[in-house]
Image 1: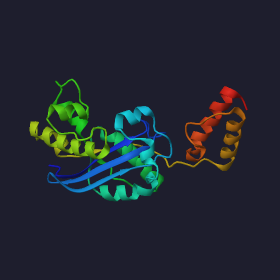
Image 2: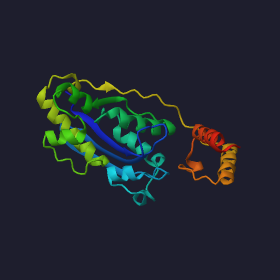
Image 3: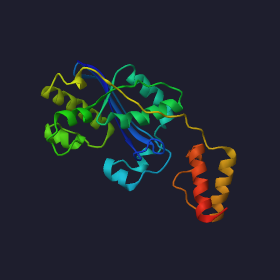
Image 4: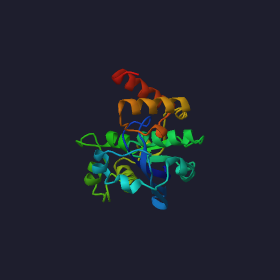
Length: 233
């Protein structure tokens, strides 16, 4: 049986790790069913979060001001995970954002995982929903603050215990899966791009959703092409 793992959950500005950012990380290290260590922090994404994300998580832009950037904490996150399998509800989503941050910091993160969503789909085909909130209600698990990273990480670990009671011999309780997400290290916006993009913004009186200094080289290139296509040079 898998009796040691790190339950991980993150909150983000959106669903795409290529362009969206982490705003909160929550983790608990579990050993033989007991929480032995905890990790929780808000993250300053460097961009504004939408009203939709605020409504979902309860996290406001003002709370993120002065918080660490992901580059400041990713080493401690990777160290916390260590060689433990990573457990999560749709764990590949959380892993993809963490791996992207790790790659950008030239770090390696463990790629062994446990996905409570996949296990729930196998063991509970009759339930109409498989999201974490619904399954917490189904198993009478106190979810704490839903859609907050630490509480969702704890909820996922408790869900894992409940699912194991249904069918202990399911492979999800004996062998972690391999987590796969291919990502390249980001290249920062170049000086010529920054100058050209700033000139376009000033000329056409444009308000960018992402500050220029927060863009990668590829993001800046796409933004320049979009402005030229819409406004001209």
